[in-house]
Image (tube, rainbow, N blue to C red; front, side, top):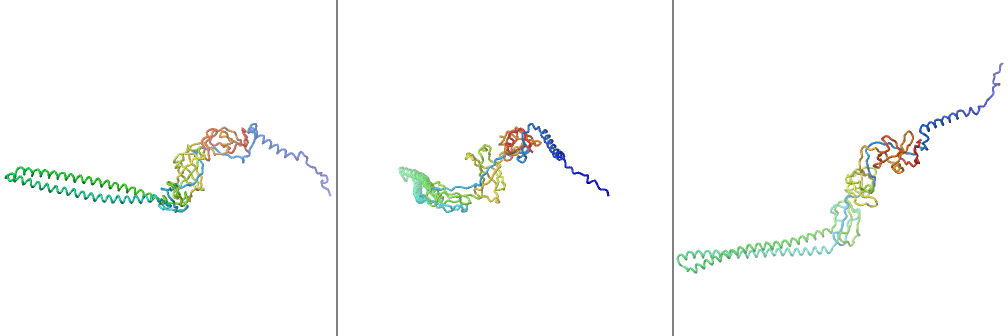
Length: 420
């Protein structure tokens, strides 16, 4: 039997060079590739690299830039009148804060003894003047009757004198009376005519005089009636009524307090009409205008409104404005409810713009890093109009460019940075 050659085999261990061959080859390849990358990006000007996850990017686009102002505010009643005391006196508050009242309902009363006494005195004087007017009318009728009697008697005397004169004409023709008696009859006729004429004038003058006096008396009564009516209005106004339907806001005085004229008493809030009161930073005050569109956000519900009023003064570096909007019962609005809003100042069509970011502040609005082939290149820019979400690019960019919009402090003012 022939044996195999296994007895002649020897176990040989691999050499060190053979074991390091593949790791060295792999490392050399990686180094070569890295060198090629660095060479391709002008490694002499790339001083550092930044992880892409630490940055935010945005692409420049053309579109309509809506300039707006973000602000906050609250819901206020468009009609919340304050009720004042019409006279000095003691107040009795009938409606309590939070009570619902209807228009015309009495909510408070004022007790004013001096005013009520003045009304009674003037009413008594008016009754007296009315009695005097009635008495004057009776006297006028009496005087008119006497004047008419005088006129009637003068008329009778005239007719008698005329008859005697005609009889004298007949008798003088037959010489039955003397010429002296005839002429005396003529004088009596002339006298009767004068008396009748004077009586007519006296009646007319008496009528005009009595009419004038009665007119004056009636004017005095009417004037006194106006005084009484005004006092009655003031006394009626002591019962203070709600000018609108709603709820009682706050008491502005104490129950049974002694108050002065024109002192505020309470407020009535009209729940049927609300407005939004916004506080806009004073830097935008000159750009605000009545009728501007305003976007109101009620907890996720968007409602459009119009700017209805702008305060002429600045308080705490803010300008108070009012916004009117169409109310919806689904909103469930409440007095002093908080909200956020966006005042739409201007629409700029065909504007090159980019999303807002921290680069605006960190770069002063003059520097940005433009990304191209994983290299962020420092670029000088000029920015224009700004909105809540975008900003206009005037210089330094074109549509389609990709900018780093996060803070540029990570770049340490380097000319080029590798974004890996």
